[in-house]
Image 1 (tube, rainbow, N blue to C red):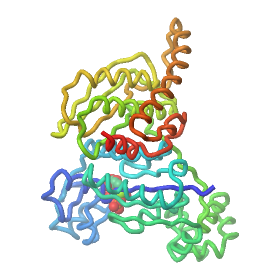
Image 2: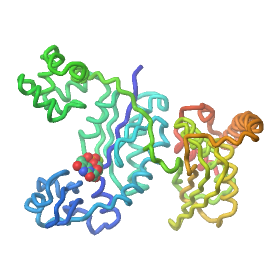
Image 3: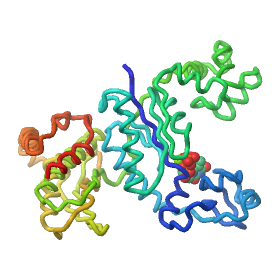
Image 4: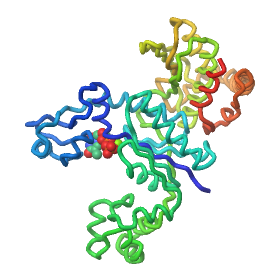
Length: 404
Ligand code: TTP
Ligand code: MG
């Protein structure tokens, strides 16, 4: 089956976050890593600094020689992590099949969520637009049929780029004369081994496929396949193992103060949190509610609960907290589970009531979904699916909001 994969990668990530925080840095050569005179390397630098030849992993001394007029800063990981969380919560409104590669980079398999490449293209641009509007950052997106192709596509038009590679043929045509290291998994060592046999480019790999397999064995076969555009690697959804919470949030295009609507949104967000928690086999011992008001002031409220990942439990607790906080136009609404553990903290005496609750909760889900769907004239059936988030949560909620 034809897969549809997006690769999103932020532009000059650390540097762009600093520019966003301090707009006076905009347009200047900015180098994040160490200060001149210190020992250290460049983590990243703005595109203005790249014009001087500065790049990631370069010694700071060398960077300073190339770009003495640059602005040098230490990295601030806490800040980047916080932005990274926000990026992830934008990305995961489009699919549950999200593989996080780095703070600023992820693969999204949207095969189950969108019909074809045309629909997927709209989503790619929507993601770019939301990251710009909500975080004031730019990213590059690649749309393709495989992970390798999506990754190469996102690099193709950096910064603020978009590119698509929708067939193996297009992939091969694009990279055939590039260095073998263009192919996933080919690093410096492998490239040097191949070079001894005169194999330097993707074209050389294709011409000498038997030789490559001879030299490299099983991984050679993988590389030969890649050189023909074949890459069956799956997008493997995973959270960092130390994930402290699972949450979903939504920023409305216009502020909302209709409490009934906010409750309905909480209900959908809770279903999404449940899905993610269940897929990861995680249970929470607390529910968290997050609200950002129109004046950008954020508040969070939390409540301890007996171990659960049931949407109804999440929803009921979050709703109680929502009703207690200050009224006012809301810009962002989020809900999550925290204090996660892989084990369900079973309280044996409650076992029977638990099984009973499970049945009730599933039945109520269908009824509530149908009621909300009817009220706003939207299709919420995809939310009944137990494992996948089919459909576009962001679009659905915006459609509901437009009916207010
Ligand atoms: P990259 O996505 O490789 O680079 P980038 O986002 O800065 O720039 P580009 O527009 O080319 O994508 O890495 C993401 C972040 O990871 C980067 O901002 C800083 C950090 N990083 C390091 O700390 N050391 C490194 O050697 C690299 C490559 C990245
Ligand atoms: Mg990047």
